[in-house]
Image (cartoon, rainbow, N blue to C red; front, side, top):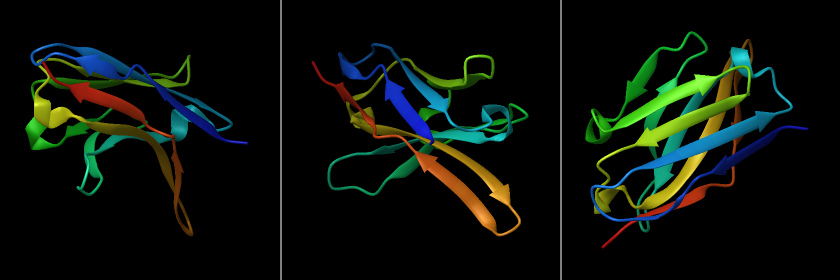
Length: 119
C-alpha cells in the first residue's frame, strides 16, 4: 500500500522560513518524479516545484529564488525549503509522486499540510 505523508507546515511570519517534508512508502521512490503543489482558498491547485528521478528541478516563477526542492532517496523523502515567505504563499501544500508507464502516468498524493504566512 502506498503512503505519501507531508509534514512541516505551520504558521510563520512574512519573511520567515519553513521546511516541508514528504515521506513515501510502498513505492520504489528512486524511480518516481516528486512534486509539491499548493492550493489556496478559492483557487485551483498549482504546481510549485518538481524534481525528477535524475534530480532535475523546476519551479513556478513566483517561488524561484525563494524555494528549493530536494530529495533523499535513502530516506524516501522529498523536501521543500521555503525562504522569504510571503502571505501569498499561504495554502495547503500537497506532495505528489508520479511516474510514466506504458498506459499513462501513475500518481500518488498526500493529504496535504497547511502553510500560513501572516503577521
